[in-house]
Amino acid sequence: MDLSSFTPDQLDAILDSPAAPNPSGVPDLTEPPNKNAQGLAVADLCLSLASLGFLIRMYSKIFCAKRVRTEDFLGAIAFGTYIATAVVIITFATSDLGLWVHIWDLDVRGVRSFINHTFLFITLYSLTMIFAKAAILIEWIHVFVPLPNRNAFLWICCVIIAVNTMIYIAGIIATQLACIPRKKNWFPLLSGTCIDRKPLDECVVVINLTFDILILFLPQRVIWKLNLKGTRRAGISIIFSVGLLACACAAGRVYSTFTLDYHGADTLMWGLAEATCVFLVFCIPGFPKAFGGAKGPLARLAVSLRSWTRLSPRSPPGSNDGGASNRSEGSPKSVYERIDERSEIPLRDLEVGNVPSQTHAADSQGKIIRTTEFSTAESISSRIDSDDLSPHQHPWLPAD
Image 1: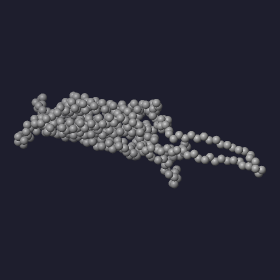
Image 2: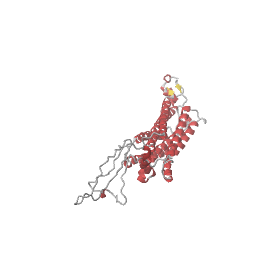
Image 3: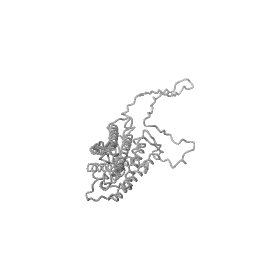
Image 4: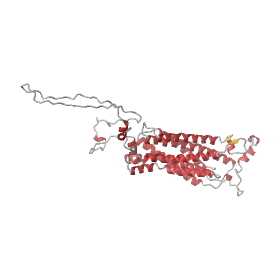
């Protein structure tokens, strides 16, 4: 159908007509029944939790750890796209579109706006999941894979990052190009072609749930093999188990996608909740350092796992380390040096010095009173087996 054949009045009449026939026969296009209040409350709660988590993590990284890494920049990008995702939901709830509104209570013009906002939500949600999950896995690589090791944990994380990115990019492209021309998405009578997006959507949500479950259990195997006390392992395991909430939300999104009804609001809300939980998975491991300093379980784990990259000076037993007043003005602040985890510490060969010998010389008559002999044996090894040093350098790693 060529829209140019319609007059402006005819086109307005079509756009103002109900998008679908009402079973009761009387559409309500002015104030349709909705659940905007519930949706707005959920969106505000999710946005508040994610914002609080992000601020605490940034405080932990900038002011406590004083180190910002690649995953923190990716997390910042994910936080920006997450905020935009939540704003789309808030726009639904505060505009004429509404949440949980029957399609027969919307006119064609409203359906067009609904589809545009839904496509925008899908794009922003996908970008959030790309950057957030990449940030989570890159941080776990830094925590659980001491350089220069290249083990299965690292390669699994890399594969998940790559496949997750490709899946969501494919979903974005398929969503934006589902109908050609794009207007056919909300005006089916228009000439053009469309693909059936439902199989693609179902495939994406199932793969997304699979990855969420895999990300949940991926660090648990490493945590429970650490050479730590059971209580400490349990505490660290709980911190890394926040992903259970993300898996539950992802399962809800799978169910709502397979049982998609007239409004699609369930899928949108489950998606926002899942994105919030994934973002909290990224943020919560930074909480112990922000609140408990070196006393938090994760902080102690981080100190142990990174002891070869960042050393902190310790006061000798019985000394008073009450503040800077106990230090002399001319003394250096620290005898330790910060090194990068990728740097190498050169080992020098030992130099053999001359051992001074003493002889008790002769008496006044030229006789030797005593003679002392010293016998020394030296053995210098130019190569040190790294396997012998590993237990001493990384005592937290599981024993073979």
